[in-house]
Image 1 (cartoon, protein in one colour):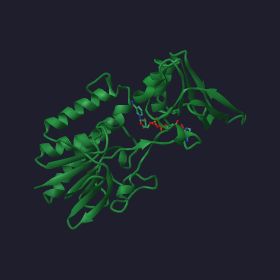
Image 2 (cartoon, rainbow, N blue to C red):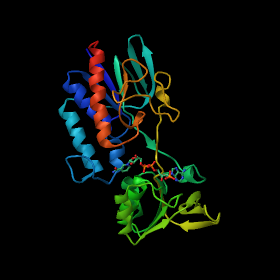
Image 3 (cartoon, protein in one colour):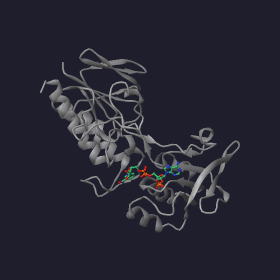
Image 4 (tube, rainbow, N blue to C red):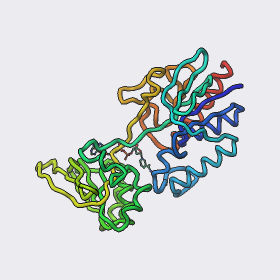
Length: 302
Ligand code: NAP
């Protein structure tokens, strides 16, 4: 039996599953949480061809329907490590160990932490990394969003629609986000830009009551009273489970090219987890297709 294990059910993993199953491979798709990956934390997606606009959750759902239609079901487990085992690989997970000749790693990336006092204590109790998931808890209240990229501005616009006031705190005086996101927040009069400021401490006792920030131009510190803080400070990779088998870049991404080959024969990397310049859903899908085709060739000895 030609089996491939796919780790991660984001757009890369789901596409890989569809292509691999349609090519006749037996597919085990392992996901530790909910399918969809970063898509599920995005309110609106406006650059995925075929939809002028679609909610991230809806796109995840549609992709998963295609996975199911290809006959693939999810294995819910958390990957701890990957080991070579003769001509196969063992994927060692929290609940079980699975074995296959080919493995596609499509585990995506996670949100970068703020790394400031109070963050750990208030994580899930006022500090959030997903505005779409948690924004509703702060309806009608004052919140802060940290970051200046597409995610931060998208989060600020989403929260601007449901919260009383949104403080958009960014460490530079210019946003990194695309112009369309900057224009979008201009239309909100309840989004206050706090530029050239860094967060230094989260304030609260029993509950979160504010954030202390420092003006980088004057070094003056001040407190902003808020009930919720949304960190949107970028994405980081966590490939420690695979470091013994595949080469990683200094930043921890899997060394790979557009053919999704890694330094280990039979192990492929697809989507945000691999070294690349542009991380987009459409590119993750392209990687998924490519990785599945390469895995098929590998299993067929091509
Ligand atoms: P990002 O583009 O890397 O932006 C991260 C932001 O956080 C930057 O503004 C950065 O500041 C700031 N930052 C980083 N570390 C910080 C710290 N310790 N304290 C304070 N601020 C910090 O990340 P992202 O917005 O999550 O986007 C990630 C990728 O997904 C990007 O490629 C983005 O284009 C893509 N994305 C696409 C869409 C879309 O097309 N619909 C939507 C969302 C995200 P500096 O600017 O000073 O570095």
